[in-house]
Image 1: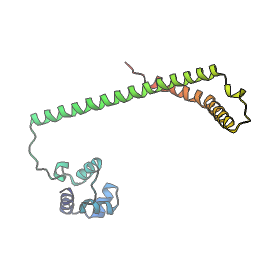
Image 2: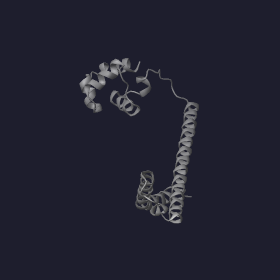
Image 3: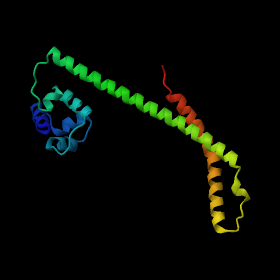
Image 4: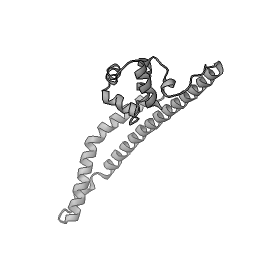
Length: 169
């Protein structure tokens, strides 16, 4: 229905596909695909098309226009308010989740540092004549070496994340 309406309105306005494409900053093939029903424009583009055609989006979508009543506007306003509240709650929940992730990451890094300090690199005193011991010892050493160099940066980033995501009241 959208594709047929677009084609009909475009022709009634005396526009070619190329002229419409130029006004919408898209290629002519895009207009052709929309009019053939092979693809559909996104919401922002629908608004731009409606502006170029000087017609409401609802007409493009095939709805018959009925004069809006105050009650209709009120119900639309209430629906939009509910949607805005839901979006605000999601944003708050996402911010809380990210905040606690950063707090947990700080705690894990501090705990891992404490464990490494307490263990005092026991693999350094191992007998490395056996291949299994050598592989495990090197793996422990590589982990400790990488952790001691990377963890402080991650800890600083996590502390910054905690500060940036804390709730502002």
